[in-house]
Image (cartoon, rainbow, N blue to C red; front, side):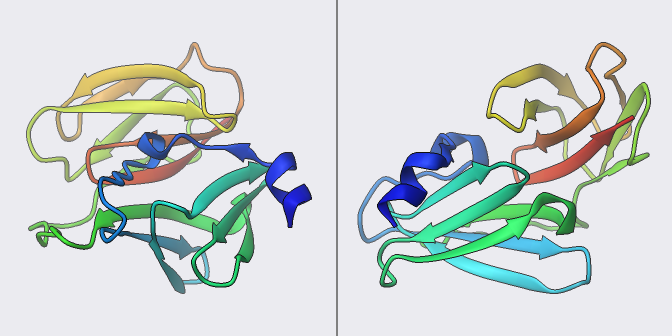
Length: 161
């Protein structure tokens, strides 16, 4: 298990919007898979999410150091919410289109102006923009690849062709 921690690239907790303020507080992270299934993780301050190659590794330290692996190609999106102060967001989920994308992508169902970060799989922010719903984001300057798009409420997977 120690080797597993050394090989993975630790994601900064704020990358997924996880806020660990107290040991008693946890964050609900849901992995939404392409086949329609969902997997919930109640992440404590000790649990971690790593990138390892083309996989995401979820390590729950508090649950007997249990680790689960997901291939990025099988994940539709990842959402996170603090469990002690979760308020149900009204309206539909945010989604992006088109996906895969060539030059411009649009986020739908955003509420008001939002700061959006686009991240490479190694955790580097490659673009940061302020957008409103249905406004196009020019990504023609980004190289072909898989990216994570983080809004205030969700993290979405985007494929740039």
